[in-house]
Length: 205
Image (cartoon, rainbow, N blue to C red; front, side):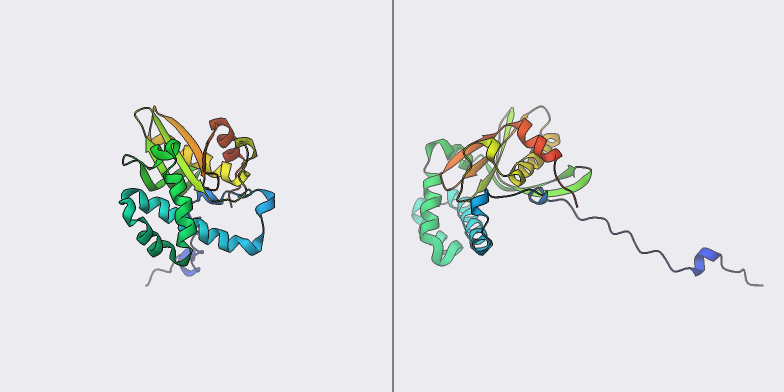
C-alpha cells in the first residue's frame, strides 16, 4: 500500500528567514548636523544642495575649466551659479588639490563586514598612497564643527565604518579619514581612535 507521508511533510513550511539588508556606514545612528542646523523645514533643500555639490566635485576636476559652467548648469540646473562658486573655491584651494588629482578616486564603492553584518558604502574621495590611504567624505553642512571632538556623532560613526571596511583591503597601510567641509572650505583630519570609538557605539537595527 502507499507509504504514509511523514508528519513534517503535511505541515506548512515555516516562513523563510529574511536576512537583514546590508548596513550602510551613513545609517549607524547619531546626529549628522550640529544642533543649530537641525531645522526639518530646511533639511530637504540642504540635502538637494549637498547632492548637487557632490556631483560638481565628482565631475568637474576631470574637465577643462572652460567647460565647468556648462557642466555645472547641466548637473545643478538653476542653482548652478552659487554651487559652482563653492565648488571652485574648493578645487582652487592649494591644500585641497591632492584630493582631486588624477591619481585619486571618486565615489568608491566599498563592501565588507561591519559589526558582524555585511556592509555597503560609498566613499566620496579616496587617496591611495604606498603606505597610507586617506578616505574623505564631503560635507556641505552650514554649521562647521571647530574641531574633530565636536563633529556630530553620526559622522564619526560613518568615518569609523569606512576605516574598518578599508583596513582589510589595504593590509599594512595606515588608514586615515577626514571630512571636507565645503562651507569653509577646510579639510579636517579625524583621529583614528575617535572614529573607531564612535563606530563601537553604533546602533545596528
